[in-house]
Amino acid sequence: LEKDEMGRLQDIKEEIERVNLEVQQAERDYDLNRAAELKYGTLMELQKQLKAAEAALAARAGGQRMLKEEVTEADIAEIISKWTGIPVSKLVASEREKLLHLDDELHKRVVGQSDAVEAVADAIQRSRWVVDAIQRMR
Image: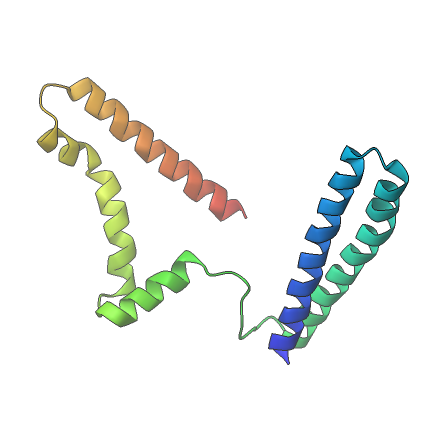
C-alpha cells in the first residue's frame, strides 16, 4: 500500500517535470497561450495533487514509514557497517578524524610548502563544514 502511494508520488513528480519542460518549450516557441495554460492550469493542478498525495502518505504512515524516497548517508553507512562488520560510529568518526588531521597528512606528502598546505587543509575543512551545516538546516 505504501509502495503504491510512493509510486503515485513518483508518477506525479515525473508529470510535473514533463509539464515544466513543455512550458519551457512553449516559451521558447513564443506559444505564450500554451505556456500559460500549462503553467497556471495543468502545473498548478499537479502540484495540488502532489501535496494531497504527500499529506495522505504522511497521515497513513503516522510518521513511521517503512519506505523512503531518498537514500541518506546514514543508510549507506548502516549497510556498509553490516557488510564489513565495522561499527557505524567508527565509519562516521573516521571521516572526522581524517579532516582533523588533514594538514598533518598533507605535510607528510608535500615538503617545503607549509603555508600552501595549511591553506588547502583549511579550505577543505571549511568547505566540508559548510556542506554539513547546510545539510543540517534541511
